[in-house]
Amino acid sequence: MELVVYKINGEKTSKKVKLNNSIFGIEPNDHAIYLDTKQIMANKRQGTHCTKERNAITGSRRKIKRQKGTGTARAGDIKSPIFRGGGRAFGPQPRSYHFKLNKKLKELARKSALTYKAKDIIIVEDFAFETPKTKNYSEMLNNLKLDGKRTLLVLIEKNDNIFLSSRNLQKASVTKVSGLNTYDILHANNLLIPVNSLKEIEKLFA
Figure 1 (cartoon, rainbow, N blue to C red):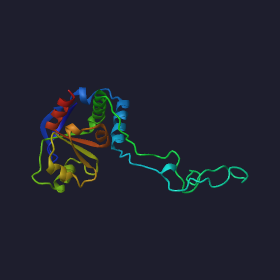
Figure 2 (figure 1 turned 180 degrees about the vertical axis):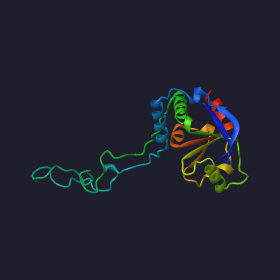
Figure 3 (figure 1 turned 90 degrees about the vertical axis):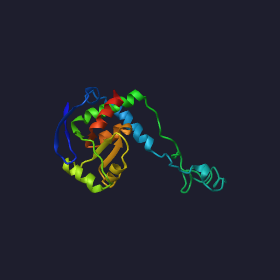
Figure 4 (figure 1 turned 30 degrees about the horizontal axis):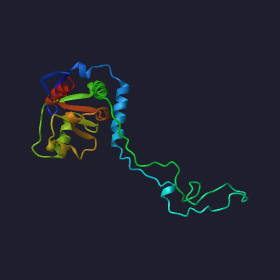
């Protein structure tokens, strides 16, 4: 697939780039995408949820009524889960949701995601902002007719001026090639990839 290279003012250039079919044109593996996305979301969870079970409740261990003859169900101490204010039975406790995946599977997932998004990729010339200014980034999106869409700009290295310019825009995200992941790719409506970043992506997955 060949794509035209755009300037950040929205004009087409005479340059074209060809997407590597081994990265942007493979047979997508939906299960790999599912597993990688599941891992990304699971690893973001804090896992700090905690409920008090009966051993953490303050209260007497005295049996509150005799075993038989009351006409009601048997009961132990006041901390029993069947009573109001008692401990919770089998409640969630702090835990880690992290799990690992094979590197090759994660690479397959990212390639599959890039294949699905190949038609929504916009290649732009390499650019930089002299100062961090949200207006500059917003104008670039307007020029490329991406206003109101979720966009992901993929940079070859960290650029504070570009990152700070995009930070106040709710649907605009910026990441580095090394930090590109399946969830971010699929979550965006369009991918903005500068020419040098495209070369780095091809080098990373080659």
